[in-house]
Every structure is written in C-alpha cells, then in structure tokens.
Image (tube, rainbow, N blue to C red; front, side, top):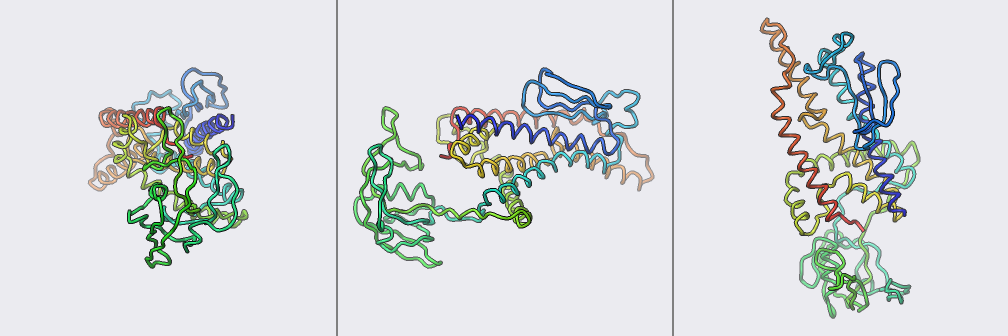
Length: 410
C-alpha cells in the first residue's frame, strides 16, 4: 500500500513540477505585457476551466504535463487584432529570453527548495566520490533466524579479528581485483577457508588475511543481485561472511539559516552531475536496448517518468523520504537542464532563435540594412521533426525498459 502511495505522490510531484514550469512562462509573459491566452495542467479532454482577465485557466484529463499558450510565440501564429502588437515574436529579445528562461528557473528554484527542505528535515548526503569497496561498520556475523533473516549476535567478527578497519578500501579479494561492492560480496561469499584481502589504508597498500565464518545467506551473483533457483525462489546456501558493511557517509542535518549555503553547495554538485548525465545520454542507448532485449538493466541508465515514479514508490515503502524528496529535486534539475538544449521545440530552441535574430539584425544595422523578417519556423520544421522523432523514440525506449526490466534499488 505504501508503495502505491509513493508512486502516486511522486507522479503528483512530477505534475506539479511541470505545472510550475509553465507558470514561470506565464507569469513572465504577463509581467512583460504579452498576452497569455490559456494555461492548462494536463492534456487531452478538458475537465473544467475558468477565465480570469484575458487568460483561460483549466485542467485536462491526462496528467502528462501542461502548457501555456502565449499569443505570437512564432510568426506562424494566427493573431487576433488585439494581439498583433503584443505578439511574443515582436517583443524585445530580453523579454523573449526572460519568458523562456523563467520556466527553466522555476524547475531550478523548486529543486533548490526541496534540497533546503531535505537539509533541515533529514540532512544532506555527502556527494563526494566514495570508493564502492570502502568498508563501513564492522561487526559479528549474525546467524540466521528460523525465517532465514539474520539474527542477533555479539562480539567481534572475522573482519575485526583479522585487523581490518572501517575506512579500509578493498582492492582485491583472494587475488581477484574488485572495484564494486557487488564484486566484493560475490568474491567473499565464494571463499572456503582463510584468504587475503588487499586493501588501501591511509593511502598505503597492505594485505590482511581473514578466516571467514560459514553461514546461511542469500547467494549473490556476479551482477550483485540475489541468485534464484530454477523454480524462481531466492537461492540460499552456506557462504562465507566476515561481518563488514559498505561505508556510506552519514547525512548532515542543518538549521534553516545554515541550510541555505549548504544547499547551494549541494545544488552545485548535483547540477554538475546532471550536466554529465545529459552528456552521457547517447552512450546509454546501447545499455537500454540490452535491458529491453533480455539483458541485465544497468542502474546508471536513464529512466522515464514511470521508472522515476516506481523508484519513488520504493523509497516511500522503506520510509526513505529524504531520498524521495532528493529524487524529485534531481528530476527538476534534469528537466531544467534538458530544456536548455538549443533544440526546438524545447525552450532552449526558442532562445536560440531569439539570439540568432538579435545578432543577425545587429550585423544588418551595422551594414546600414533594415532588420530582417522573423525567422521562418517552417524552414526549421525538418530539424524540429528530427529532434522530436529521436526524442520520442528515446522516451519510448526508456519507458519500455522501465516496464519490462525496471531498475530496482532495493
């Protein structure tokens, strides 16, 4: 039940994010004297609407975003007599850029507010690069209860007795190099007697010999996921364990005033990661296709709204509301950054056209020539269609992957 509530709440969060994006366009257009004909949340059949001033506000049946209809966004737009002088394409460049950037700014602002909320309510995680194989808490090896879950235990575990320490970075298990926690667990479980860890401690390499304990556990495969029997049940067997957990830096909680600069720093780091993710999207197409055609799903592949909502449901189900809110903040940063791309029909595409017209007319004036006519969007339609088709196919691929082979964080 909590999972379903989380999915719905996250979907609502996405809808609100898109609605506020369009609000940014609308408020900026109204503030600069342009006419906003309609502002609707959703698409498809109209559920209801009302008119205030010259703008119709309403709700449509499909909660897949929203739109803001500004008179004269392009020279192709048909205008009423009272809209001719207020057409967007006739306005000064700074006004057109302001209207386009206002929607993007709303996503960035909402993302920042959500991060401040997280900093005050739960604390912010450390985004510094932490090695996957860094050891965290060391403890005893818990025997299984009757239901198979780990039970209680006391005393030191094999890792502590051997001299391993929290903070050690494991680089090899039994002579096999490891660079992920999944490989570390897999190689550790398969040991049958004393073996050697190669670790880095305080920047210095050393080797530590550990005698593991044999215990009933879920068998982990090379991909880091639970192995399954032929009947589909989770595979359990006697494996080696040393009593070590992965290191996760603790979240740091802030008071409201201290949360502002901390959130600004965190936002900068998150925006950098968002930009890197955008640059790497083309290279992820192959991994998505592999996931759709029966291969393993890489946790680093892009997700659709369906996939994001599903992950939101998983975090809510486990009470990880800080991760829920941060995921929504990350999505807003991605929406804002994505819309900056200079491709029509994205906001960045309209800004690129406005800047082109500005620079073109500036050069013409220097040559003593009159300003040229607005850019003919019909000539840009082939490029726009290519962008829409490629974007649509990519969205379809991510949606398919999220339905038949979703990313599972837990």
